[in-house]
Amino acid sequence: MDTVHFTAETTSADGVVERDFTIGEITGALWSPASGPQRAPLVLLGHGGGNHRKSPAMVGRAQRLVTGAGFHAACIDAPGHGGRPRTAYDEQEIAAMQRAMAAGEPVGEIVVRYNAHLAERALPEWQATLDALQGLPEIGVDGPVGYFGLNMGTAIGVPFVAADARITAAVFGLHWPDALAESARRITVPIEYMLQWDDEHIPRAAGLALFDAFASKEKTLHANAGTHKELPRFEADKAVHFFARHLGRALAAQA
Amino acid sequence: MDTVHFTAETTSADGVVERDFTIGEITGALWSPASGPQRAPLVLLGHGGGNHRKSPAMVGRAQRLVTGAGFHAACIDAPGHGGRPRTAYDEQEIAAMQRAMAAGEPVGEIVVRYNAHLAERALPEWQATLDALQGLPEIGVDGPVGYFGLNMGTAIGVPFVAADARITAAVFGLHWPDALAESARRITVPIEYMLQWDDEHIPRAAGLALFDAFASKEKTLHANAGTHKELPRFEADKAVHFFARHLGRALAAQA
Image (cartoon, rainbow over all chains, first blue to last red; front, side):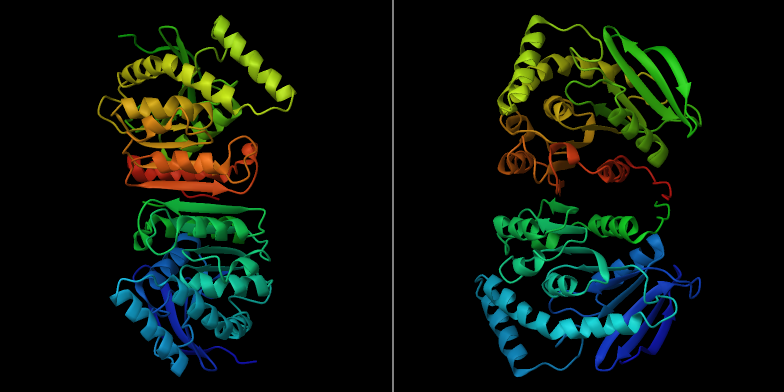
């Protein structure tokens, strides 16, 4: 088993320690409370397509998870993302997406197909990442683990959460049911699902169908008015509350 | 204008002052922080059918609003509820509902019709209540006001919020669109809407249609797995966060 190799460490003004790491070929970042190596639950973050482990959305969610509830948060670069090598197939699918977007044509079919391919490559990487992170004393093998990923982070996360029983709560959203409904029907842990009511890419019925597919006894849909990219920022706070409820942490006071 | 006449006062162990009041013929309760008569935003609570101003759900929500964010919370008995006199029409509709329930028949049509009737009687009472409560120094005429009501509390609240510009944020849920969609289309303030994904009384498409009808630029649907009565208790906390965001209060830390 590959172990976590830390390559850089910074501490922000709000008391969040950010450590870059590698696990074999995998590149990632781990955010933790500055108060020291006390054991705390871990939330895994899956980034969106074309993004990377330290994109603003990932850093923002990680900071909220650490400062809001004292969690550890970790994100790894998806295959072909964050400077990792792209295959010829990656280049071909990315070009197809860019052509469709430039022409104002629907991108759903390409995104669904390409994200399903990336999810297959990402699954063993996420499992190796979780194996290695659980080897750290401040995380441990028996601590609670959550997963939070939207867009491509959902395409990769749904099969991952369906396959890995260590993850006991998950936040997903903003994807199509086509390649994911079958995995969703095998997920029984509590989930929160984010959907944009006026999504110009994902038809409303398609988003509702994926939410409907989860077998979880506790599942909550958060549907917000607005287009695909207008997901309100307060949903990141709600996700912190969701993980605090399910992974067992108290919440800090909020201004 | 009728003014608030307080008839009883108790203070709970968690520092919530509960005062019963009358405003003319209207009977109500006001919950406030025990820390004294400092000005704070007001959240109006609409109770469900067959219930009253001090039913457990109302007391629970009021306590969360007061202890979680320092709000005032007020609830009045709906017409024909909480010991208030019933008309012959009230008796007739209640009997029709009870017959349908006992026979296992759908109650939607009766609930929609009877709640729409009660909403007409309740509207001037809610407006008089808000007039009078704004006369209290700890509330004031220019402080923020929210409305929170599910089931019959939505049937009464949607026309009320559509008619009264003093209310700047509202939480609704668990109703049919038939008698409410027209009022909802005139509501533009931020709303949160609660829907039960497996509601045995309200068809899923009907609940989604009412959420869809609100003209609010910021609106969020919270749809939870479960039957009509299985609305998770954590939604009351989310409502406190919603009002804290929109009526301008900080949140206390949560265990």
